[in-house]
Length: 93
Image 1 (cartoon, one colour):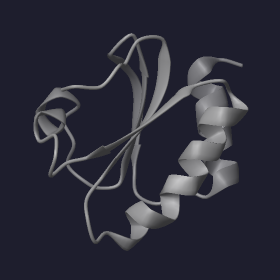
Image 2 (cartoon, rainbow, N blue to C red; image 1 turned 90 degrees about the horizontal axis):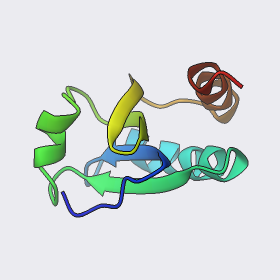
Image 3 (tube, rainbow, N blue to C red; image 1 turned 180 degrees about the vertical axis):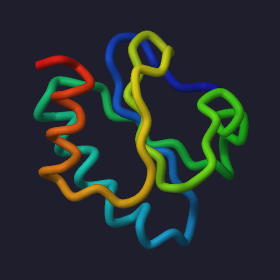
C-alpha cells in the first residue's frame, strides 16, 4: 500500500462506479477537515491489498486509523452528521 497513513487518518475505501462511494466522499473529506485528520481515498481496484489489511467486506468503507492501525470501521453511505458523531465517539472527543 503506497499511502502515508502516519498520524490520524480517515480512509474512504471505494470502488469505481459505486454511487454510494461517490456520495460519501464529500462527507468524509469534510469530516477529516473538521477534525484535523488526513483524508485518504483508496480505490480497491488500484490497491487490492487494502481489502485484506482492513478486512473490507463492503464498499464504501470508512476506516479511522492512527499510524496505520485501525481504530474503527464502518460501511455504507453515512450522512455528514452521523459521520461526525461517529468520529467524535471513536476519538473520544
